[in-house]
Length: 267
Image (cartoon, rainbow, N blue to C red; front, top):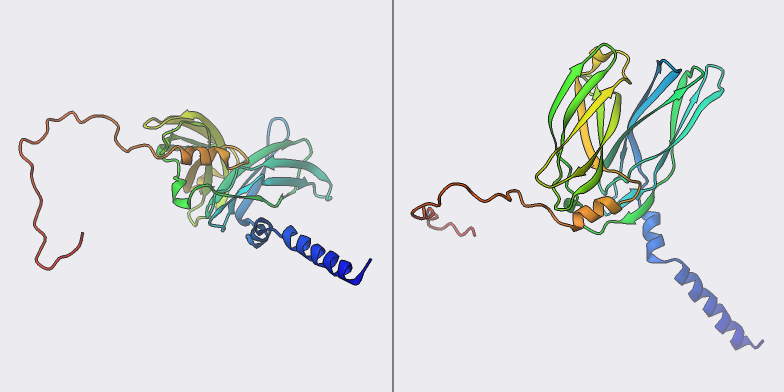
């Protein structure tokens, strides 16, 4: 091999090394990981064992990327440190510059004394639309009823999008008067269409002393570990606020408009 051939080979290797560091990989490396804003857990005696409940909030501070395929690993141990519960819970996609409220529960045969939650790092996917295109799903007509051993919540979920939402998850986070997270619960509603509402019912038993509950914080979101359901709805467009024709007669005469003051050049 001549000297010039070795030089050409070295330059080729340098070019290949430069190509291997793609802009996508560099961008993914610069993204901030999901952060745990808050979490809580409880252990209650049930008919079939010990019910372990948990609730938390994850925050995505990246303004252009979804956090996908996040998995929470819930581990419960007894007083001697023996592991009595290990459960992997796939979580829904976390929207750009948004948060994810989640809850879960499992029954343990042996009595746990402590619960911990670990999170698998998210996979990042750039959003197809700007953040403002991902509108929240409105929750309305919420009623609550405090019981001795549970907290009942009913209400309705709507959608701002033209396309129907095949399945939405509704999560309630229960807080005390100081805003501290006490627990929560989740349920699902299907086939939510524009200009229509779907009813949900939540009977939450994760808080031992229901008298401490001062507020129920409700949020609805697309169900699934990827951003695809949310992005498909956003790409379908926003439903018009009024679709019914007016029932009153038109004005006989145009009411006109006020003349702008002199010097006012606003459009």
